[in-house]
Length: 264
Image 1 (spheres, one colour):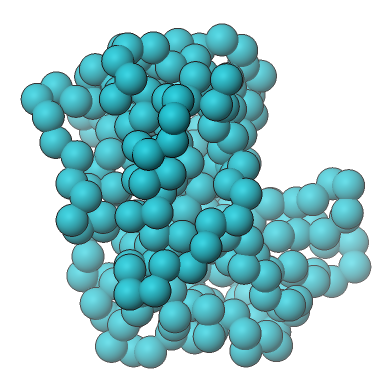
Image 2 (cartoon, rainbow, N blue to C red):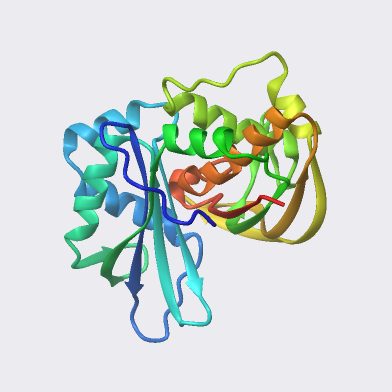
């Protein structure tokens, strides 16, 4: 996410993006489906009352994913949180460090030092895009773990702009509270304002609970069209995307994304 560093907004609902380096046994490599294994381990470190509340929610206020850094030769566990209580609890759980035994793999993964990659609020992000002089021109999206959608009971493994915008808008409106975005056919108009200008995508499987979901990974460049206000909304939501992910099962490791919004 090309954010610069947004200042802390005291008293506002904060969103945070954490990253922890994972140390695996020699010769072992982490794949994106590790996210589903680590999800259970994370829940075991959180207060019981919070875990029960999170399980009752139809949309989780966090996303998490695992990716392999080829250049560095290590695995990264990234967790985005858009709710204050959950953010504080997850941050504390990660600071505990130590090891996590993966029963499915038969070995322990050690947690490295926690890093706070980004911290912002819904108010700050909205102000950034609606108070700046010029509306953004487009964005680059890098899908780091398999991304997929579900429509009418079927999986959709293509980067459909309507489904991308719908996913982000639903999450924004669910958690932003006082900055609700609503207009008739808004999702459809957002999708029509996006034009694919460049892409390098591939089909990738994601294993979860004994079955496989196919999704896509890679990069795509998007140009924004439409009104000044529409381009500001798109920039704001694409900037928000790394905290929540895109598509289905983002709490289990799918749909992790990094974004860079273009000003020109």
